[in-house]
Image (cartoon, one colour):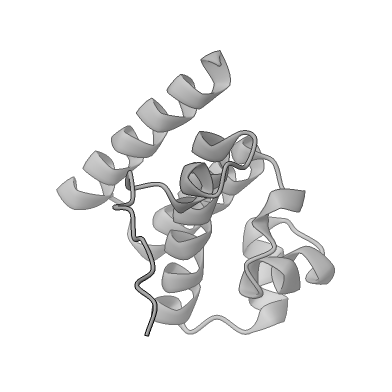
Length: 112
């Protein structure tokens, strides 16, 4: 049996694959994951999700299928913010920290 060489990931699968804009893809993937988790937690049907996020049904379907590359980073951030705002009138400390972390990542990605 032949031994295959394995290399340890750098923490970004997109960079490991050598894809252009790997950092941007990672941020979009993380935002999409948070959006989908919030939609499930709120138990929103597609029409309600479309209204809340101000997205067409086709774009909501793209999010559900992890086709986040067709939506801008700003659009994904606005969607996450809308979901967090609909959940509670005052964001929790955890939500505020995660939003700050995403904003920091966005700023870093947009600079490059």
